[in-house]
Length: 247
Image (tube, rainbow, N blue to C red):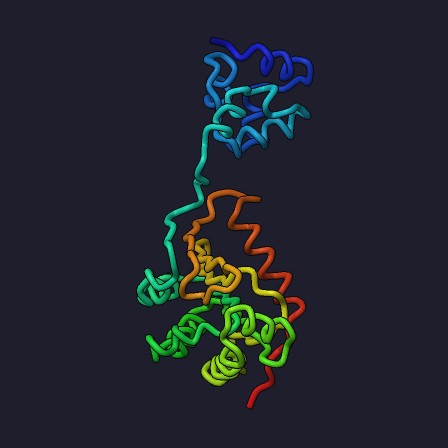
């Protein structure tokens, strides 16, 4: 069945299969199928086409609205774990080992990584030497938000001491080319462990220690998705964080 709405919009704007294909980065045959066979493109491609044509994407492809309503799980979700303790440390290590462009850590302390994998600094140093940009944001032990988290989790000054311990663990990386180390005093809604286009999100729950809170594994597959939301939040915290001096 032909897509008459798409055909009319293209005709009124002087669009051909070839020009719309160039605008959306697909083969002209794909556009021909959209028009003549009524095929529905992938959402990302459909949005590009609608933007180029100046039309509402759901007006051109109503099926996309139905598909979005029916899809309960994001395509970026790889796995969901009931608590961080369910993940072996090897999951984090393997993630970092595979990174080629970027490693980002946003935590308060996460000393479990060094405790279970003493070679963590060497691994991060190796990745940096291979051209991977490493950014580590740790909690400022003297900040109000870190201290408040300790009270909420009934952990008292323990979280402050763990922030200081984490800084001690990572400090040898300060000054290593390709590695940046900062401290932050923000409210930590989620701990983030990013390696290129993969991300482990430890979602914090009021009154629950991080190891008992859920973790979701995300893989980026399009712009503006859940992955990018967390990536932007990391960047915002990073900009406000304080660089750690060498020594």
